[in-house]
Length: 178
Image (cartoon, rainbow, N blue to C red; front, side, top):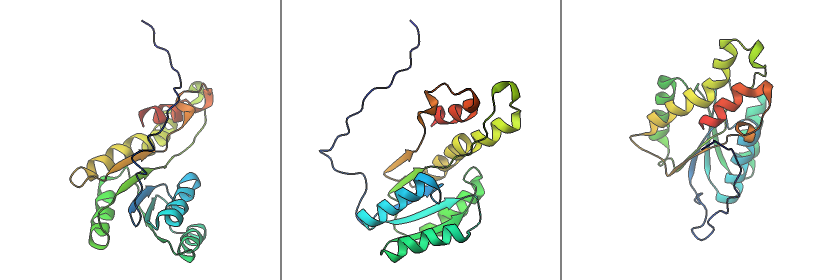
């Protein structure tokens, strides 16, 4: 037998309804950027959800504006700075959230780092930098949630794991893991 990659069309089960709950609490790792921020707005607008955004960087003007735009439309959103690959930082955030929120209904993982280089020019630091938010952070978060698991964990991975872009082999490896 030989290995062959292929995309298979998935038809979602619409009989059971959405995984998202009205008034649900959702943790979005990497939620202040790109697709995470779009999903945060969507959850607040359509499900009156409370979104907890977690990221590695400080709360800056752009993140404040994102939170304010969500709150201006009646949504509930907060930002917590943490490196999700660091188990102590994850425990601190989850402990804080348990004191103030109802159970976390879902976790959406949309964090990433890009550092494009072909393998011939890639150093171990380049590889580790890209794999950390995809692999280490995913494992750390899953372990931290083991005692009180959410209803679902969704990874925003990339089709890059199936594509053949030589400069993104490190990112493809991380996406394949997720």
